[in-house]
Length: 362
Image: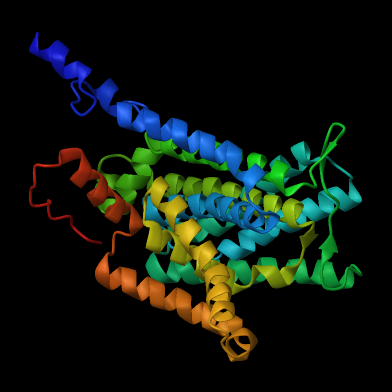
């Protein structure tokens, strides 16, 4: 009788199957929040201005790229500094497919993912021998190789400072409205998040986590370290290349100037600030880091600060990213997702107070 009562409680788990269920609608409070969030999601593009819809679309693209990078760095524990290069590969693959082959978006996205898979496989081969900063330097070299190839194609192909891409079409519908893109991009974010969430519960996901925690112990347990490291690079690069492809389709341009090393730093800031190894942390970090530049511009305009900040905006933006990373590393190394976990735990257990468990910070 007690077991049956325990099964009714959303907070008590009595089986492995119950523990593996993704908790989204298992409490009345979460159900109400889900309904409210869904209504806000549907109503937002119809009540917000085009400027805010554009920002939300950029946040969605950042969420997809951050999910792919966090899968590699946060879950598998493999340092990558080539994120911008993989995004550029997806964007330029989209440009080539759209201009030279005139393929629709439902072929362009998988093709860009395939290009990312090939480049991810090549970038993952050094992980068989290298670790840590040395692996990061090899991915950084891969970044510059990709950027060099894209720049040669862009400038020697006669495209000037950017390759114009026509708005994609799905049947008779043209994806040129930001409101249409809003629903498409956030649906892709939802699908990507669920895919990674379930992938981490599978055999490859458990292998990546074991390699991250202690690769020698994982090898002793029979995990093929090299195979799963290369697989992590391939899966992550596919997601990142697709995010670059979506960025090219959405902005209608593919320019090598947009994929500098600063973009890699911003995505690293997203997963560090949001929370390493967390799907929710990737989304929270992508939201904060993407909004920061727009917030900085708003503050400078509101305070009527001189044009010095605007003249050196990219330098100020880089410094702001660095400051945010340092503050989170000093104050909360586990990121925004850990702050959210504590807030959620406080309200779930209120009015009962307890001293939180000490979490090992890595």
